[in-house]
Image (cartoon, rainbow, N blue to C red; front, side, top):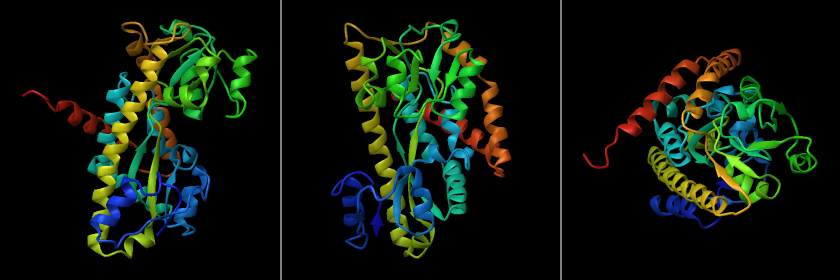
Length: 316
């Protein structure tokens, strides 16, 4: 099967599928054949058999998949939040909803490539209270984030990905909303701002590993099962690696003498999430307007999956 880049050739996903199927599943990883924003269309129309789709890029057409942009939908603790995401994506009800909606686009959902938060508040001004957000000019990443910032009293600014660094440096904006690993590793936001605060505005960002539906349906049942099982195992590996990356970035930022890694003061996170509670209905309205009936069921399944995850006792 031809695959638009999913991790590295020779990595666990490709290797496990080959071994478990006794060589019957062979992935030909052809690299970045399509931009992540175009992979859904490419897979759905059969231009490529499998790929990694940037589902947040599809939020205008499929707002259902943009649930991770609901403020406070995941825990404040970033490491807990990643495992909440994993539990949600592995939940049978969520999986069923994703299967149905991806099939509308000609694809089958295999697993979530969880990439951590996308809601860090990188700013030239300290943000530790709700009041600190008032009037703050922040580059927003998506419609839901812009609406949430505005509701919190900040001033969202739309700036292209290639221009936000210069916008911060020149003072056009006070900061940027983006993930802590991305902001640290790729964008080098710690060289342009003085602090980052763990924020609730887009607490998760996830790409989806998908397969052409006709190609999947043509496989024997045992190979379909192997794909499902290996995909679930790989989702666990990806989530664990994401936790490690988040922790390494947090340690590195916290160790800097000229930069602050911040959290909201006691009670302020809950205050902000409460203020932004109407965004859940905004999301539900967007989902309904898109023609999808799954918004309420999706929210119920998300909350149930989180509750089940937290109910686990490590020392019963």
